Image (cartoon, rainbow, N blue to C red; front, side, top):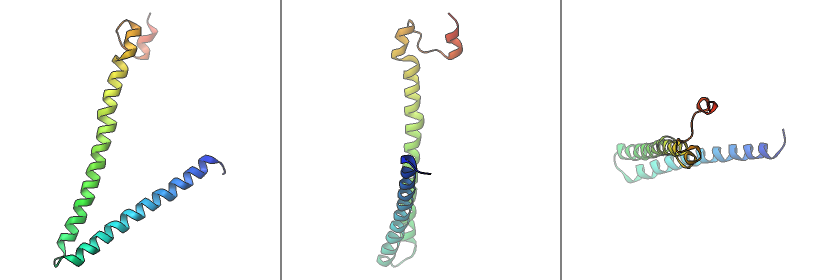
Length: 101
């Protein structure tokens, strides 16, 4: 297979692999540096776990916000917004409703 999209897919795969490698190495480095600074074993584990939990929660909150909150607001505006003025203020109607005159 050749072409521009195949090249883009290959670049994306290399990039995603690099990002995963960087994240893992960074977490290990932070753990090892923190372990050298602390006399006990649990503070580095707590630090790394809190960083991972913070990242996962931020990604989850972002997904919820952009996919559900903003998508709902966009759909509501699209159904009842500007296009409603073209149909006498009724807003957009489902396809079955459009068949009726």
